Image (cartoon, rainbow, N blue to C red):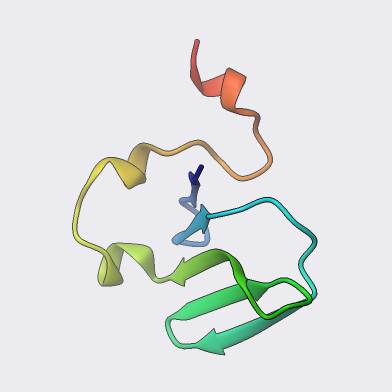
Length: 73
């Protein structure tokens, strides 16, 4: 199950692909990859999202740190 957040101030979108403990983060600009201890990708952050991603509903994703229930209201 994936989950998307978008931070308007940072212009960064984050796609969480799996639950797990982040062991390291790798960069391949404009992307940051959160990896688990086995090197599998848990999440991907897109920096400069409005310049990198095609327009879409990700721009209305919940803010980082807010729960999914907060946006369902």
